[in-house]
Length: 633
Image 1 (cartoon, one colour):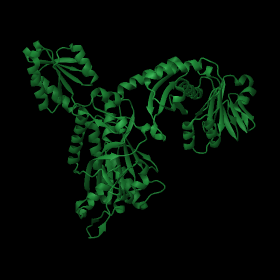
Image 2 (tube, rainbow, N blue to C red):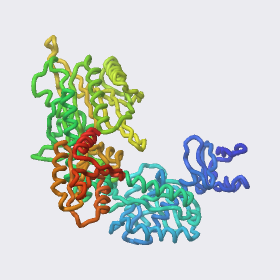
Image 3 (cartoon, rainbow, N blue to C red):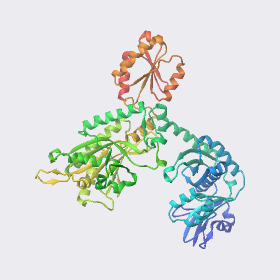
Image 4 (cartoon, helix red, strand yellow):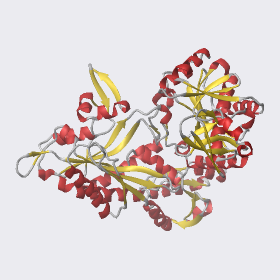
């Protein structure tokens, strides 16, 4: 039985009725209904759908949020037809679908498409939506769908379908044209309109067995006003996008053809990363850690013994050397245990703290890679503390205090903390788990950290605290973790001699404050729009002498800056106007400009100008005081 919930009551229909038949039977009440949605699950049924079983549905009205989902699927299907009409046999369509703010298309092209092609693609979309062409949708079994695209001679769509499970497959038709789609469809191209815009294109080759597969993403809205609002938001977001800022600041780049997902650090980026490492090293030293360095490549047998290969094999990278299999390390835990085992350890050595800037590798699908935020190779501030059970609380308190100090230095004051407790399946005994969970909670309390319980989300080998920072746009980024581990030391045979001369297995507390240095830097860049704190900025100052006679005075100022451990650029190009020179460094996100004219030089003065255009004249003595303050920021 199908129950249709209307504003003035409900009506019932027999199972197996089409959505269109329901609308027609409703008479005037059916006006403006473009589909239905289930009350419980939120599933969408377009007018092509056959409703079966015992379900309750509500109408989807024209112009509603749910109608937007249907229109976005139509726009995706129109985009796919446009690509096929423009590129003909050079392009093969794979699938279309709906996103939160728009739609997407995945397709193969003999000659890759770029954003420069968007204008002609949109024009062809307008041609299609300008005509009245019927849209239909049918549901097929996997075998039936494979046969259809075999007849269409589309091996790429067949390849996609073969990756799917046994669920029914939606195929949309626009006239004679067919495409696999994920959501509900409308019934006519004329109803789609043209409130859409193509916004990005990227490669997704690793999802398939062939290259040159691309994804085009577009946005779609009910009206031009909403479309413009969203495009304006995208434009504003681009100003914060770390990928754009990194390019302007000469921080880094990714060569997608040579080392996709791995960062090439330019001189400026290398300075920033090294300054971050120097600061973290100072923190490690302050809190009693010994820095170590372990191999990037280690035998597969070690990863099997530790359990990592079993749990993370799909995300690990393997190399065969001398008839042996090695893995690029995805984390540093087993290597640190080997270091603990290098000497006989006593209870007097505990807690035993090791830390490393571990260069880790994890396989990520190319479609998920994203600048500094999601990479295949990254540097982790990876630390492990070997301790006894009664030391766990103090170890975690010490880490939490260090983490808070680190985040404050980078300008992040607001923290969110979650305590992930034991899952359904776990190793160890209940008493040990309860003690570890209590230790984590007690440590958070002692450090004045409000802790949200995340029940059942701990790892099978121990509970953990997760630390998230909030940026200026109210985005929340999970970065730091501290994890209690009852298992790994035992699996790898790490022991210490206790006070009674017996051999005991240490508890391991794994932790990282920044997580991935690359990702943390991406977050920091977006939080500051590239105006990094002076102490970590690659060049927080540039000296701009306006005349040649002021160059010696400029070099004197640079020497002062160097004495304050502040990087400084010099610009002696007098051929360009001052306005152009200033704009150039604003784009490079240099926060402070020291401008020296002939008159200022004669008086021993400089003009200190910030990126917002605020400026003041200062003597050298006042400049030094000002710069010392900026170095503390």
